[in-house]
Image 1 (cartoon, rainbow, N blue to C red):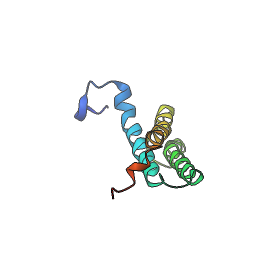
Image 2: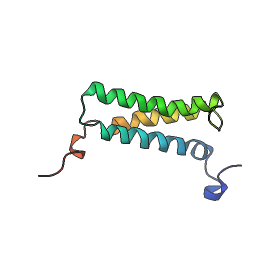
Image 3: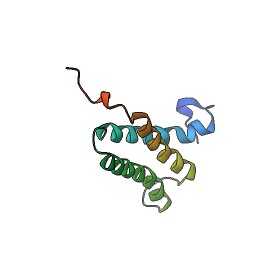
Image 4: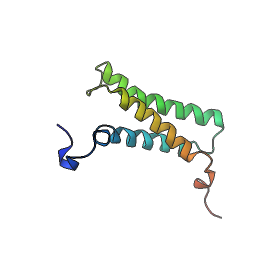
Amino acid sequence: PGHVAVWSSAPAALRDHFADGAWGWALGGFVAVVWLGAPARVRWAWLSAAAVVAGGVEWLQYAHVLRGAFDPVDLVVQVGAVGLAAWAVEGNEEWTSAPV
């Protein structure tokens, strides 16, 4: 069964992977903004941890620790979304500074 309550004729890529990408984007963006002013080493350590968490959810489904079905496309989408969000935030320190 698909997501018929939302949009029954939505393309499969949108139905099956959009939520995973949105979750990865939100996680990556949040971590990137929180650590935006930190030294690069610290920032990238936290972003790497976010990518591991995003990918880890799929691996835990594969190991039957979490309910759900492992999907390698979801794995790529989630980790990729973390990276894309970090890239989008990178270099925007003005987002964290208040006007004086």
